[in-house]
Length: 475
Image (cartoon, rainbow, N blue to C red; front, side, top):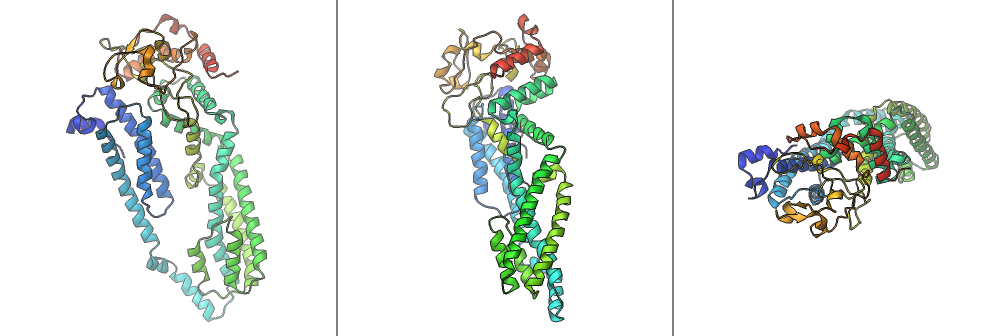
């Protein structure tokens, strides 16, 4: 699901997407990046709902609209009504087709006739057992274990595993606070020394963080030992609860009440499908005491088979089955409010969404965000934390295209607190990056290389790292 704004403008002219105001290519690119980011977030939400294999609900589209509204409110572009409507139409139209498919699959899967046909052979075999008065205990115990208990145990493991992965990741220093994570990401970037990664981080900040979090989760659990211990703990807990429920249910007077007692005992721990239970009880004349014996045996066999099966599953497969998505929850913890500096687009450092004033510890040269001098087309080296104590001016849509002094920026952006650069080394990290990759940024942004101050070329990688530590108060 993609929305190509360049193609739309070519075919339908700017007014169809952007209103009547003319747009520069950099403005169109910023809107394209914003649209791509919002589409990606909505796709994640849609995919998550489809994987649940439930029926469609009206709130699904409302949730998608909420995601779009929230993302647009935090976007660094001036989104007019035409842009917003076009984006919502595109995303909701694509989502509607996916949800329609999901709804049809759900109806088909839960069609009574189809379900009857699916269980026809089993019902026939059960009828023959009853007719010929055969002992059904062992067969029915295996059936109950495989159709009712095993899915419930797997569901319990995957319901718990997502939260366990999050808790395990939070024990590391890098996820202890939002600032710690930001520091670790920037330190990782400079250590890897790849221009493409810096470009990815600057131009697609949220997507880069998501990829980093996913990579770190995979790396942490790569050898399987930590995850295996957690899975085994949940499996043992489930089996213990099942065996306890079997012992309590033995005293019942029929197989139906036996199963009902087991479901009651496990109710707050394991969720047993009532559809599977209903199919199991049809034409079932097994003795409950004998059934309890074979059920205990069958549960033991199931535990060993399930342990091996789960441990051999690829990590990616396990992640796709989790009810709580660790990378999403961790991202929400470290992304903060999502607001970015109106000048250099560096993210706000304040945690959560409840603060009233935004700030950032480490501002960067505006050229890294594609800003260039009018006339020369050279990338800008100015840093907004220095500009706010200068006599220079800026002009943008927020100022209604009128020139405004940087030092009076709060008249335009009252919710931002841009702190002055009190030491020459405070922004050495981004000065180093700008100087090192000046040619690459200029080529990528189709601009002319910045006129780098001589002092910037003398900043070493070690000095940049020390500057980073100082900015984040790392001892």
